[in-house]
Length: 352
Ligand SMILES: Cc1ncc(COP(=O)(O)O)c(C=O)c1O
Image 1 (tube, rainbow, N blue to C red):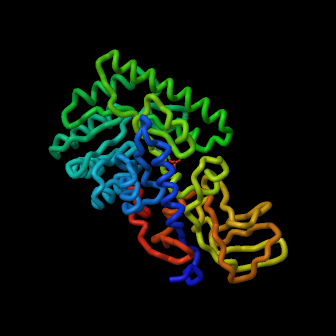
Image 2: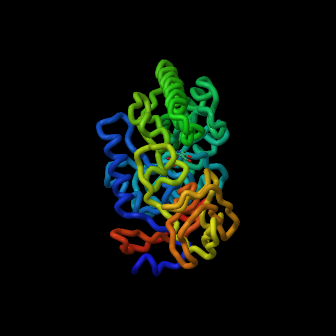
Image 3: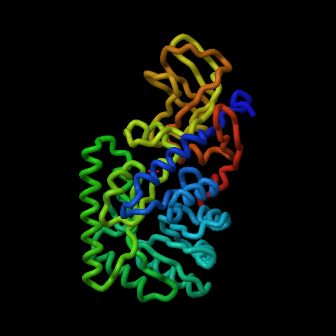
């Protein structure tokens, strides 16, 4: 199939750029302390996770129970849900899943830990746990070393659970454009996590794993003394927001769109917020520097000089790759300007 014949909007991945990003990350971490545990949320395709494992990733990170189930169904053996799973029926599914793979989940409160233990015990499963440390994002996680210690101790005491280590993700630094600030805060966080690990060790608790990091902090995390896992996700596709940060990865993901209106100083494509998620920043059309743009549900208008006509196809770099992928049923893979595969976004919409 030729690219011109794809109906738009459609998700297009450059197979060569994808491979180069996978290899670049593998090279960045070669011989370093942290190993890659890439985040599934970016592509939601188990066959891409398998490529990452083949390139040296130790396992996969995901956010949702239903994503973890898809990963296990596809044969991925080591899965981290970097999130809190709450609710009786979900915990029962989690415990069943833990019998099929090496499964780790995060926790940040006693109530959830007791519920995890009860579910694991009643299903005859072992659920591995990371306790989450809050690192400035003000999402999940405990605030103090003391609270962390109490929860790690509880996990060690309760049946059906195994304490494995620390979830330490500072998402507020992922898109910090000021490199010096990003590096300085990442370094401060590193010291805080290092202090925690020592604090726990002095009290008889060993933390085998310290997990976290993003595409934006991956170069710093590669040099970490304390992190054992890097959870970067977007590096594999990149997007217009990360693309402005000079991180060394290239755009592999595009939305193929069609120009549906072209006037002097303005053109409009057939993709709006329902096809190009702008939650982290606006999209960009390859080859055209728009002075401004406006997004509505099914249109994006770009205001700039252009040579486009109605019917022309353009490649759009989304503002945020992960949330854009979740809008599509399938991905077209391109190599040498030809479609070489058309594959499903297996875990699209898996938010449970
Ligand atoms: C828990 C967790 N780990 C890692 C990441 C890093 O992802 P990325 O490299 O796409 O910024 C995220 C992003 O949302 C996350 O929520």
